[in-house]
Image 1: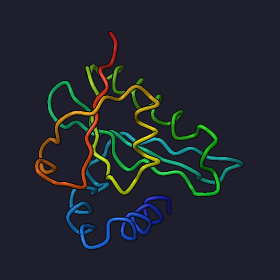
Image 2 (image 1 turned 135 degrees about the vertical axis):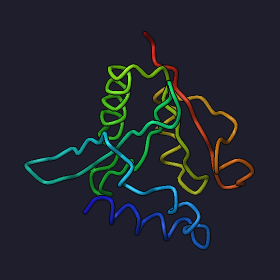
Image 3 (image 1 turned 180 degrees about the vertical axis):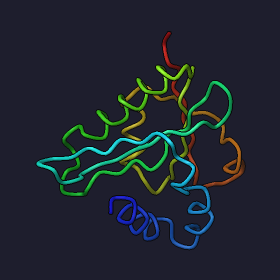
Length: 136
């Protein structure tokens, strides 16, 4: 349910770029995911998947609109980082879009640094990429 809502919101924000971005958001390749529930109802999610040895990519971060602004996304993000570290990864990286200023603020607030666009996002004007080194 949360991923469907995320996809609908991103389709609206991304406009004609949505198909490109959507092609890199297949949940079938995500083996590690967190779902946050409130009174048994899913309100937020996020996942990580190996991008390359030593690096996990943060994927599919989403919080229901009525639950935003309460720090839930930061909690999910920190738990994903802990999980990545426990699995032996040294960094988390991610891509988000310039049309998602809330996501950009979330990652900056959680000590992610902007990096050059990686992989399929190289040269994509709307993409913003981040990384966070995980302390040993």
